[in-house]
Length: 112
Image 1 (tube, rainbow, N blue to C red):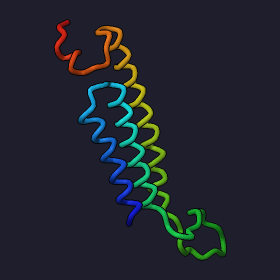
Image 2: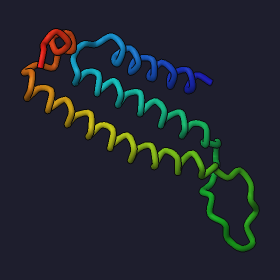
Image 3: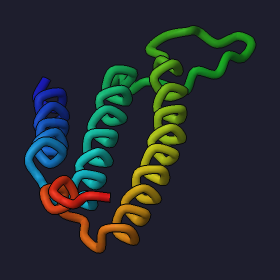
Image 4: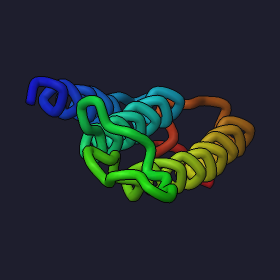
């Protein structure tokens, strides 16, 4: 149970970074931290103590098998998270080229 709580704390750290920081790069890093927290939570949901791989073979008992669905979901979220991070970094680069700053408050006050 404490691992789920630590996962929640990690998500809250990323959420704090997204909501309170003014630098675009720090916001992107906060999004990455939130993504890692969600991936860790999904892995913890599918984990079983002394579990074995979900591979069926003849003449084997199906006992204490790890759930493969969260593992597949984590692989999907890694790919989606990578795409979101690439788009966010490319937008940050374009914003820096246009305005010359990563600070959101200065970007909001500029016109153009």
